[in-house]
Image (cartoon, one colour):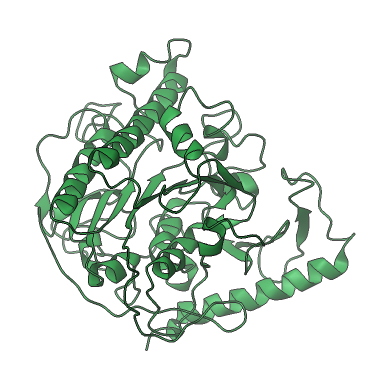
Amino acid sequence: MRRLHFVVPLALGVIGLVWSSACRALPFAQTRPNVILLMADDMGWGDLGPGATTLTPHLDAMSANGLTFHRFYAAAPVCSPTRGSALTGRHPSRYGITGANAGHLPAAEHTLAEYLEEAGYATGHFGKWHLGTLTTEKKDSNRGRPGKKQHYSPPWEHGFDVCFSTEAKVPTYDPMVDPKTGKPYGTAYWTGPGEEVLDDLDGDDSALIMDRALEFIDEATDTGRPFFAVVWFHAPHKPVVAGPEHLARHPGHEGQAQHYRGCLSAMDDQVGRLRAALRAQGVADETMVWFCSDNGPEGNNNTLGTTRGLRGRKRSLFEGGVRVPGLLEWPERVSAGGETDVPAVTSDYLPTVLSLLGLELRDDRPIDGVDLGSLLEGGGGGRSRPIGFRSGGKQAWVDGRYKIQRNGKNKPVRLFDLHLDPCETGDLDEVDLERAGDMQAALDLWCSSCETSAAGGDYR
């Protein structure tokens, strides 16, 4: 495995809306937990939980043994921005990742991997990257082209020592083969600069990803190092393909419905494999394992993937586009069977993990996530700061039980009470004018902060 080392200072914070901190690293906490971020691709909020137990028994077991977030949000309704938020704690519109295949993770951004690498962790990325291209030497995936350096931004330049990564999507079975034509799909796995993986890439893609992730975890635990593993499955993003074993589990379905269910089953098997491996290594108790999806399900309400009645799907700022499955299993610190309705978002990963490790941020640039530590310890209360969304010119603001949406700056807002109306069927903006106005002012201030960041105002 290739080991690359980068030590880069990290930063974050904003006055009023955005948390800030002086920047010095504190000594690590006495116990340094391992950290794993699992992410599905295009998995709907309704694809996990009641009614889905035949598809995801291992994720259901993870939920039963940990904390389930009933209101967990992807930072965006499409994949690339959400992935950026998970690593930086910042809304991706601050640094130019405004959509899928748009922009890249800038070198001036600082990632959770860089923080933990500097703190002595082994760091690894496995699966879909989608935060920049991985080669400038050949045609690869959506944007990799010979000599094209504009968006070259691979994980090994953002704090990851070990990689097994693709730029973007691949078929979820036999990932190097186009399921329609039988020809090469055109997206490669890479382990480092110029290091394309050419062998042993047949079969279920989720298993191939977990093969490499478990090798990394085994090596880290055998040498006594804490580890940070980012495992971003391609499942169940199209091309959705399941192998014979997993198709056979769903005989009552045909065509893409059978493949979709088989694809989810295959990914769930790998979650079970990971949980078993952590227990076999004796590190399950001190390992926090997070699971979410990058956005809501693809297509329309007649296609695969479910929102369990929530309005909207992928690319929408209605709940069905951004509310996703959210789980945390950490036996040492999180009680089994916990549930919470407190809103949380992928941007919360970085501030939460750093706080739990006793690490502080290095400057006052804006961070949009919050520390969920008190929530994990069973503390009461709600979220300390609202969650903002910007995508495709549309904006939204979630503040506790209330949410506003608008179709662009200076456009009218719609106000929803998500406790009484989780499916956003009727708006309250003309009923509760004061609340709608206050939330709109807060959203305007946050959007202005994002625009300052996008103009380079955070980089000194």
